[in-house]
Image (tube, rainbow over all chains, first blue to last red; front, side):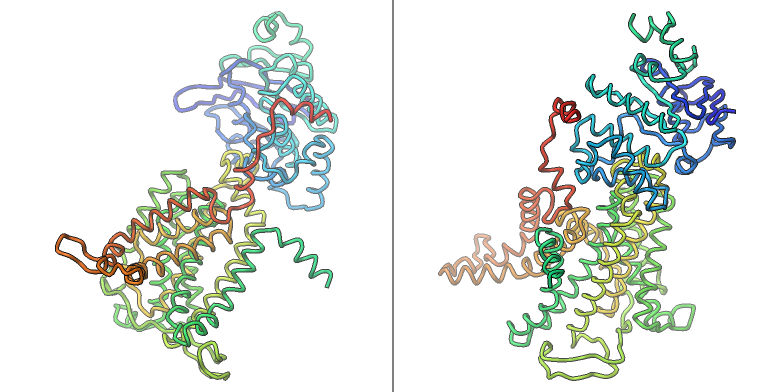
Length: 236
Length: 402
């Protein structure tokens, strides 16, 4: 049984169905990419796993326990943490306070300190900007804060929603190499991306989401080589 | 010595530390200075300042709700009323005339905390169903609550004394008190001291102690984990929930703590006035306190305190005295005819100023907000936000490589 198992979830916004029977899993040590076009239901899937919305049908099992209807703060406690789409920083709080908010559910001061040092190793830039207000940072720096904040929760699964959105090509490279780095240090990553090419390069496995349903799955390499995927998402 | 010097050096550039220091010093010397300047007849002014302290307490409490947690509360005076009426019920003969038939005389020092506790409970009860609302909706609900509570007190008949309210409340007592030149008397020890309107300095000092107590409490909360959670909820509720914050209970705590502070102020108010009536808790009180917080600097404790001082001074000293001052000014300029009313409809300068009191007040408010949109003493965050230049997005990759 995988670490995180999502099986057959149906998610609605009012009467509009956003996800139709999606099934996916993330196991220890993996980077899993979830790709698809606008409105395919990628973000909704992540929000459902985080407990911000609940599915009408289907189950989500994490670490052997059912979290389908668990509240978001309890899910964070269990170890699933999300860096949300559009970053959603606490824009009028300092970088330091944003990172501390990531560790909100944890009480052990010295562990928090150690994890903050680890975040500074990944993003040396943040240490220089520690007491600056997050809203005044550049886009790339804000993305670093968002990822750092998610890491501060010491997640057992890290979910990243569009980490490359709106960043310059050089920064996109940097962000994806950091994703690899985070994974190499032992954290499984569920990556939602429109930049399918980059995401599949980094990912061990991938899922292709189309109008709410998963239409294709395979290893990162397989999907990169697949003709359908190339046509639809890689522009080849 | 060096530690003292370092302490001073590290704080002298911090506007908040300077503001706390200046406010503490002027609060301590205010009674003596006033008595000296007025030749010993300044009791009225000291009492006025003690009443100002009530507003300051409320501003500190509302700052927790509006400034820290970002919840717009337009019915804040309701909790003030609840604190006052709670004090009136537990510390007067009034319960004796209600169907209960036994009056309670809880000592002030305990009743103060009962008032605080009841107000906090009312805050939690109101908050529990309504704090799921966001923004404007919450403002409307609290506005309604602020209108309902005084009406309930006015119409609850025998229980709350109806329109005339409840009078002859107990005053605070102490086993002893020190008197001295600051009240125009010789140094001495007064046993079995009762706070009365003849000794307003005692009320004033009590108020200073209450404010110090509340400021220390709220300041520590602000710097705690809970304080960070409040700010996170204010910035982005969904992201806060995704970080593991139980947003409903965190907001409920802000609401209750704000209400508790207001109840605390209410109990003091009841004791000092020795009288409560539903007329004193209208919408204007809620709005005045909100204006104090916004004008002083939302989210900053000394800012809210400074806002309270400035607005209270304008509302309760400057504006009431303005007509007389204008008359004096006119006659000293030799324009005595301005002071005379004439049959063409000119009512005299004093009357004109008196009638346009609120126009003047509004102009002052608009003027201050134009000159200092971030408030008189803004929090560091708002200041950085309003002055910081956006780093160029293009420069970011280069900075990263550096």
